[in-house]
Length: 233
Image (tube, rainbow, N blue to C red; front, side):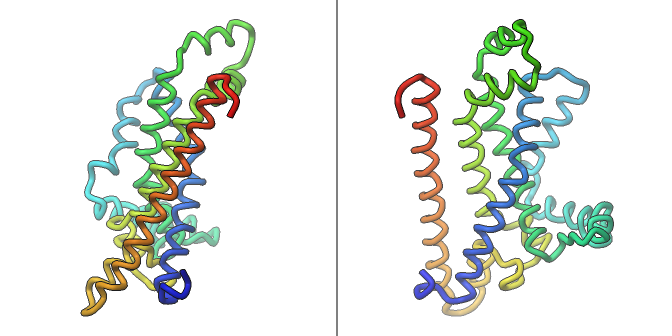
């Protein structure tokens, strides 16, 4: 692939995989927690939390990117504090990962929440009556049953993170090697005469990565389902 792609195109591919990986890895624990809270708990502000979680899906991505810039930029509400700790988001690959995580988070939460809601609460109640704590019930009963949903949410989030463009380019711009992800590289290639061939190569890579991730998730989901059902994998 390194002979087929130019060095800049290869850098965009590597950066996109890096951004998507960290976006999913760092948001997964919070995604599971929020999905469980929305599926099982009753608390004041639940509707507001649900709305905030899904807000990136209905807002224009540029608006989300603008909010990220105002919040996590060097002069933002939180960006200054993070900068003092040595963590800079604006116009860095870390900001691209943050933008991708924010945009992918609703899809992850939605998939995991539906999986949790499909688990019979009576199973959790039975474990609780035997003296198990909430955390132990979740770890031993709920979590194994929702693993296919977690996997589905992870794959959806990864695919969204790989394809994120609007919020990313608004928050971190389109700087080659530093913040230029696959979608940004495709956009940049289409802005110059004769760049269609480069854009096509990157599109083919995007499709290959997405299909590979989907195929892997299907195999893993089937194995998990067989194990949960008590059948030999």
